[in-house]
Image (tube, rainbow, N blue to C red; front, side, top):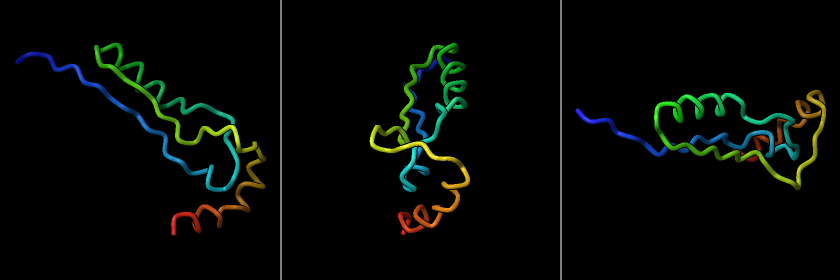
Length: 75
């Protein structure tokens, strides 16, 4: 059987953005997965749904107090 090269889209879904803040880190795990897939000849892209220039950073304790905003957004 022949080799099949795939086009792969890895998505980091929104979570913290519903609480009106932006996380400090890049979805590093998805970067690792993309690197391995690329090494095996697949074409990968990462979509970071959390990225927004309109949101602000905030400490985790403050963010945890706004968890209800996330739950409200899901409804």
